[in-house]
Image 1: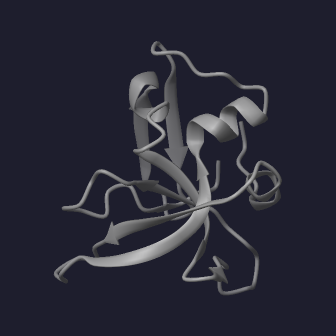
Image 2 (image 1 turned 135 degrees about the vertical axis):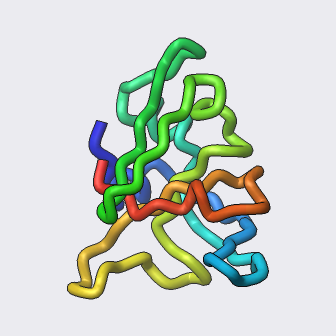
Length: 116
C-alpha cells in the first residue's frame, strides 16, 4: 500500500501531540494532524491482522518494520500530514507523510518521511 497525503486527508484527520527528538537535542512536544495507521489501512481496504508485517520506507533510506499488533495500535502508529498547522512538504514543495511512533518518547526512530 502506498501512502499518499490526499488519502490520509480523505480518511479524516485527527490531531495529536507527540514528542519529537533530534539527535543530541532534548525532546520537544509538537502537534501533528493525521490518522492512526490502522484506520488508514481500513479506509484503503487493506485490513491488518496480528500476523501482518508493515514495512515503512522513508525517502532517506530509513525503514522500520512493525508487526501487526504494533501497526494496529491506534495510540502508537500514526501517519501525519501536517505539523503545527502547516502541511509537511519537501524542499521542492511536494507534500509528504510522516510516520510517528507516539509511545516512543526517547528517540526519533519512528519519525520517517514516508515514500511507501
